[in-house]
Image 1 (cartoon, rainbow, N blue to C red):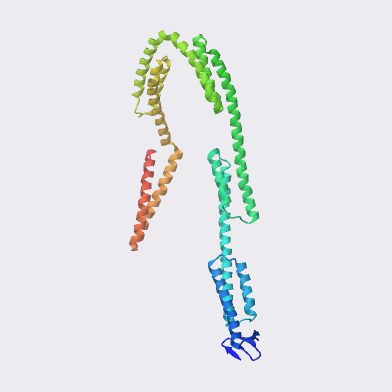
Image 2 (image 1 turned 90 degrees about the horizontal axis):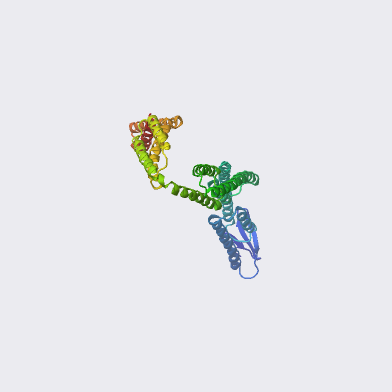
Length: 409
């Protein structure tokens, strides 16, 4: 008979393992010595030790699922419980029990992680839906369309929720995209219809302009060309592929007429030169209105100059841009002054500026108190941090006060 701390072999060749519940039969051994029998079943024990060690490593270092890990544990436990090995079987059971705890802990962690990911995905998808529904009402067709396509890509990259929630959110998301596409399609269909109508109108205007190009009835024809130009501007733009060609024909017809008219009216060049002199004098008078200090007086003065300007006839074509540019510059300066006055007296903008200034002043006052408290408590680190924050807030306040000053506050 042979034995070791964990097992023995009796005279019949039966191999036993020692456990807390007493000896358990491992198996029988007929060939070889009792020592060889014990060594054989001890090697089986070592095999179980190695198998458990490998499983412990897989659970710790890989993403082995809890289900697969439990199947492997149950398989090893069956071998341990069958007592077909000689060694500390209780120790193996303890390791398996600890491994079960680890697997359960991992299972719970993964469950919580999946729940967290699902919650994050839900919030992300709800945010995408809310943005899509807002974009569905936008008239910024290109920007909104591109953003909606980007939202679809973002949606595809998010995990799926439970089927009911995912379907409901996708239905809202898809409905918002469809609503935007429907509105955009209707908009461009209406735009196409308008441009087609503009094309028909402009073709009619071109035909009349071309029919008038040979007229020598200078006054009425010139007046009619001015009317045609007004109608042209009111017609709106035609399709891009037609607009330039129609305009070239329209202007070409006018140029033919006015060139002929100019040649006939060559004797009026002297008159136009005198007109130029008068307009240059009016431009000089208008320029004296600047800089604008009294907006009402400036408007009245410019209106007076402009009325006299309109009463003067044509000036030479090559001189027109320069002299008219001088008048336009004065007119723009008065318009800018009007806009500045409107901004200065705009109650809504002033209220926003006052509200912002009040908020920033309150924040600055609060920071001063907090700094005093921190210094009094000896917390200089906190006080230094608050002073850095105060610098930023004070800069914003100074800027806001400057803006408020522009409103006369």
